[in-house]
Image (cartoon, rainbow, N blue to C red; front, side):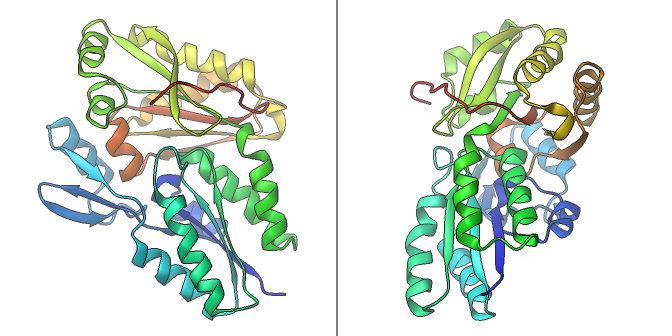
Length: 297
């Protein structure tokens, strides 16, 4: 039975060290600014993370794409031609068209290569929540599970991955259509920070408004403490958009109250970062299955 390769995409926000440690590859998306398109590489080799987020702070508008069809074709053919099955764990289909774009390409590649399997799984989350699912898949693969067993299991647990995030400035969510211009103006004027979860269909949904920057981290820590299941046996994942000091402060605040086994802090990559903007903080934990479903994003 062929071994299988695990793929994510640029929204998984996995550092090169994480990708190497768990033997995971990814399908790059693209971002466009000032009329030029660049691959959204997770090693930040095109623009450094500092350059990227400073561009945004200085008013540069950055737009993003889903995984291009030729990237899927290249990755799927590459691994199937070397005797591997493929498991692609995508960004939430509520946030990106990548999952839906992958399906016909996987079907075509399998028809050209009978006996090989390509499974595409909608993670219904992004950033380190998506990464965590890929890490679980890697552990199962390394223990000998086949691609279908792993894909089925990941689909069964994906809604147990919880996101608790907030943004530093509502302007970026306004630009990508997540909040209205009026809401963004008054939110910024009154110092409002949304507490954003990933709901059961995988869209980002603000469940509460936090007034005042000093209240943001305590609110996030309280949600994590309330909703983490068996924290002593899981990793606390925190991602940030050029805001490492606050990410570390959140980690310390959480760990002082909730006994997570360990923690991982990683920077938010170009695709997610272009939507949420500099200063964003996100945390990812395992909890009970998410039941909340928001309205239209």
